[in-house]
Length: 262
Image (cartoon, rainbow, N blue to C red; front, side, top):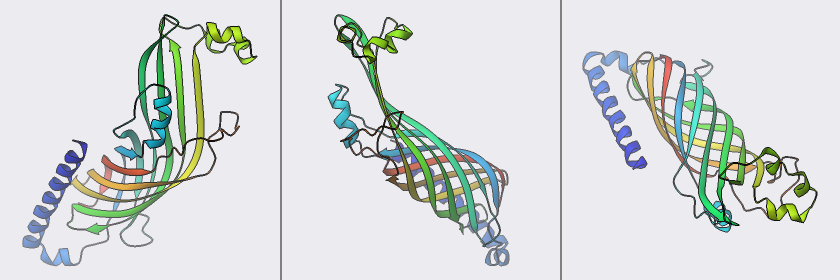
């Protein structure tokens, strides 16, 4: 359904661009042939749908009895774009985003109901360069490349549903190896972190409905290169960790406000 919706939006953008181009060809043929370099300046919000390989995630989630991850990781992304003017039709942008995917179920242990959850979170910042291929004054295609730095987090928790005291989670005897505490307290929390750099080649279709409002639809492929191994909060490496990453196809829909060529 998500891919069909994106395809519909892209088709509408292409149709709008074609209509706009035909209008200009009929009224301003000379201006079209001598179009000025692209100009754009603004800020916006995008919804990015990341489709990673869930195989390594599911190895862990099945061990926890949570089933399989599926569907996209929905990410909220905010960005600033501008044309530096150094090279014609070149545009730069700064982006930051985050998103989470999780599985949750209730389990009964020692006749007590617990909520068990596994999650994956991705947080990133990136710079991007795009090149404007102007189809009409309002419709532009932007092939581009983003370079970014991010942090991936995988975690799991298990907490008593009826309410859990703070010191049942931060349980001193449990940390000190008191086995009796292990049997009386089944609250658990585990978290692993890994930092990475990534390349994100993308193609965006953009249509400026007014000089101040621009809509975007695009797609790309994210390739992450791990900088640090999976480790705990103290930086201690977790050996034999699964090859979990944010690699995968992504599609995005967005809206920007500012001053754009129209």
